[in-house]
Length: 243
Image (cartoon, rainbow, N blue to C red; front, side, top):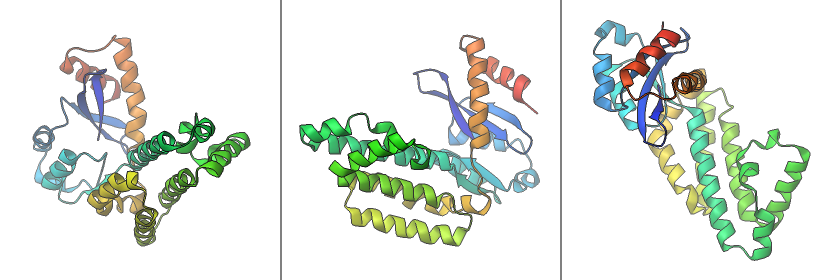
């Protein structure tokens, strides 16, 4: 399950429900409300709903509540890419706070560091890595933020649920010990979603297929110069991407 904005800048989200195994969109719902999703589930028999084994979602409580109410055997898996994105946003906020408080000469070194910090360190060129190390030399706190982000990314590469649970627990202790208050919101996210997050490590399920679909749906919108009528958009998506 993943949402896209029907009208750019309006917060007008529609919910796209897809099946990676079938390689298609199952349906498009007019909003991302719990009641709307539950009504869609009601179209299926209890026996059909009981066959759903995994539901990949972003961390939106209405999805979780609807799934728990209607899909008794589904393991809820919060999307790893949304988790990493949330953490990257935390690192960005921490960088801004560090830069605001830093002397002018330090701010000059840290300028333009945003993308270097949030990209995977292994994907940086040698020159970019050298630039990052120069930033760390003038800001140990920024280095600490980056290291925590990279450590979390490594946890997401694990394939054993118990090992991941232990690593996540140790990572959260490191964050608390660091005293970096900007990470508090992410710790709250893990407190609320950590149990579901561990399901990811059983099959490494994610919203990757849905994210790929989004590119195709955006193309459908552009070809039509946008849609003002939801039902027209839904029908076009089902014609091009449906079962």
